[in-house]
Every structure is written in structure tokens, then in C-alpha cells.
Image 1 (tube, helix red, strand yellow):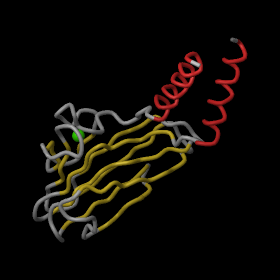
Image 2: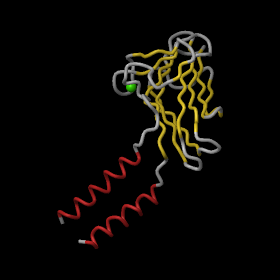
Image 3: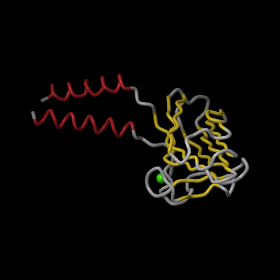
Image 4: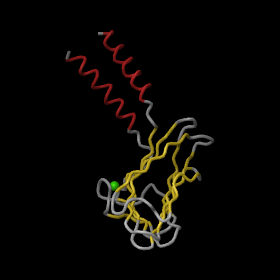
Length: 177
Ligand SMILES: [Ca+2]
């Protein structure tokens, strides 16, 4: 009974590690800097407002132009998920655009996200036609700002396949014993 419990534990930990393989560098801005990001305009800066941890990044310029960009090495044919949290400070006179390899996946102006609250955005995509992919975030706000945090790209887990694999692994281990 004890041995079985240990094996299940190992399978669960392996699954969690696989699901969490993070491809974005400094997506939570916890370096306290914009390290890892390309920055196109000085009106996007580190802020102490955060979804998790101590820091986020705020777009506070009054005109479009500020941009955070990161190039990722992805594998063709694999499904990925881009996730982020965004907080909208002011009403109107603002906007946000998110692109994945030049394809617009989110574009809203004035930004309709809930005010003064964190909202999660999520986009699934399949990588194709090239090894390097850019994720790009543009934001502007004439009054206060838009904060982003916990920007993440991970491989989308296949629940049915993963469960079968875990079960098969467990069976094999138990047979050997
Ligand atoms: Ca953070």
C-alpha cells in the first residue's frame, strides 16, 4: 500500500512539472526589471502593482507606441497557450493590442476589461512555419495605466493522453514489483 502511494506521487509530480514548463523569461517581472523583454517605448515601466509577487509592468503612455516584446523558440505543430493577467486603471482613452507572430489575438480600444481588477486573458495557438515566435503587447492609457503581469506561454497539456500515459507507467512499475 505504501509503495503504491509513492508511485502515484511520482507520476503526479512529473505531470505537474510538464504542465508548468514556462517558455517566457521574466513573465512575472519579478526581476524588478524588464529583463528578457524588448521594449519599444519608455512609457512601459515596472510597477509595484502586481497580480502575484512584487512587480508588474504598466503601460502609461497617452498614445499607442509602447510595447513589450519577447521572441520564443517554439516547435511547429505543437499547441501552446498564452496567458496573462491585466488590470485596467482608467476609463476610456486607452487600449491594448496583443499579437502572436504578427497575428492580432486581442485588440480593444477603449479597453473594456473590468476597472481596478485583475482579469485573465488566454489564447491558444499552434506554432507553424518557423522556429522563432514573437509575442507582443502594446498598451496606452491617457489617464492612468494598464498593468500586465504573469505573462506565460506553455504547451497545452492533453489531459486524456497524459492520464493514459500516467496509468500505463503506474501499471508497468507495479508489474515489475
Ligand atoms: Ca509579478
